Picture 1 (cartoon, rainbow, N blue to C red):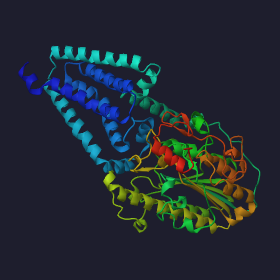
Picture 2 (cartoon, rainbow, N blue to C red; picture 1 turned 120 degrees about the horizontal axis):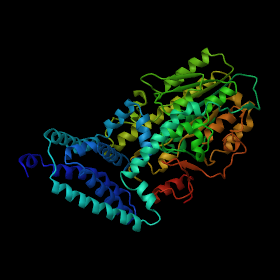
Picture 3 (cartoon, rainbow, N blue to C red; picture 1 turned 135 degrees about the horizontal axis):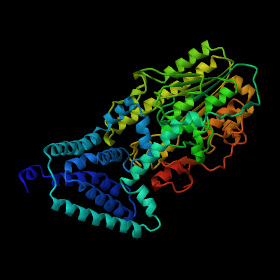
Picture 4 (cartoon, rainbow, N blue to C red; picture 1 turned 180 degrees about the vertical axis):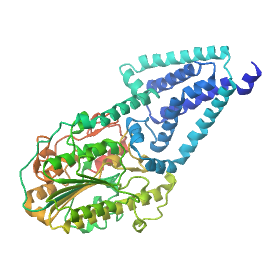
Amino acid sequence: MDEKTKKYNPLRLSVAFIASLMLPVAILAYTERNPFAATLAGILLPLGFYTLFAALSRRSGRMVWWGFIFIFFSAFQIVLSYLFGNSVIATDMFLNLMTTNPGEATELLSNIYPSVIAVCAVYLPLLWVAAVHIHKKAELPSSARKAMFACGGAIFAAGCLVLAIGCRGEARHVLRDEVFPVNVSYNLGLAISETRKINRFDSTSAEFSYGVRRDTLPDCREIYVLIIGEAARAADWQLYGYDRRTNPELSKRDDITVFRNVITQSNTTHKSVPMILSSIHTSQHDELYRRKGIPALFGEAGFTTYFISNQSPQGAMIDHLASDADHLIYIDAPRYDMQMVDAMREAIENDPSPRILFILHSYGSHFSYHQRYPREYAVFAPDDDVAINAKNREMILNAYDNSILYTDHVIAETIRTLEGTRASTALFYCADHGEDLLDKCDSRFLHSSPTVTYYQLHVASLAWFSPEYRSLFPRKVAAARRNLSAPANTHCVFHTMADMASIRSEYVDESVSLLSEEFDAEARRFYLDDHNNAVPLDENIGIDAMQRDLFARHGILRP
């Protein structure tokens, strides 16, 4: 071994490279609790592959940099394991990465700094040393490369044998969904495919029409409001039995209809909100790219439509559906949700249209929670901006509950604004998904995890009707009361809004409307998994006994 090889030791660099890439593999082997054969295959296959890959060139430094995509996957996976506790990088994670604005990303990264520091400490020195090796032209000895090829080949062959024999009948599933980084590569491919469909939406939906008609046309001004909540789990709402006063304003009203059994179709904003705005059923995901949404529906019915968003445009599907509104308004900083109500008030005062629809896309309880409300709503304290850690749960929970308190005020102010119009008005609120808050049952945080939880699925939803609307549509209001505990998912939002305005179309299903006497309480509920498959909620959805008990306790799943 020459002096250069001794000094820079490319074999040691190759071993460090392989070991660093196996870190997420080891984490997943522990957290996923797969059958032994699947776990063993999940270790042997990447270990063999990485060893073979590292031996492809005499320049080990060059192979480290050529393998940067594997380093990126590994770092990403370690951060997500810290955040969610389990599960591989999902398709939705890649889509979130592409559709999250820099401000939101900075807020999150600043609060998960232990994992960020850890991956930087592992991978940045590795890349730096590899760059030095490239500069110094350090080379692996031929004998070392031959040994790595032999060892890597044997390990990889053993992994293939375990996969073929030990996972018989499940080999394709295990390889695609359980072997890192094959599963991540597959999910990345799905994310790219979804992005292409989103980008082609304007052309694929260009000829679509709802062909609407109205079976009732009130002889007065009409104003309807849809508020799309953000990350508002039902468990932290006073209206749902929470022991904190997070709904002090709405709880004083006797004209609020609270729907107690609504779950989201997806625990990710970029999928949940488009499905809320669309007529499609959970099982029709591909149809999403061929149909327009609520703004187009109401536009065809002669309404002037406003889409007021407190979330930045991100090139996601939400933006395409929102663009059909006559007026598209994005709120500027500081971006508190009351600014949406102010914009709505201004429009009501200045727009003489006899029929108006407002869609308010709120920032709600989006992390980082303490930035979602003015300081006068910091009722639960301390609510400091802290690292995501179980020891800080009290402050995280306080900030989250303050954001719900502020949402309560926003909804109450929206209602007061509508009351002042003396028009026939109605409001429907529904959150896009819930949130995990380091709860004792599983210590998860945020949402979008590939394995769903009760707190991510059960969302807050309510309606309000003006006296004028009640007088005109008593049967709709009475039906809403009867459907308080009806099992629904966010598929109901589109159809409830259409029914609220007496809009009919072949795409409007009254059996899904919470304002309909025909609501089908026996229909099965589904949520959309990471691969866009509609999963029945009443089947085995990959949750443990504690999670199943939470669902059952709230009447969402059978015990």
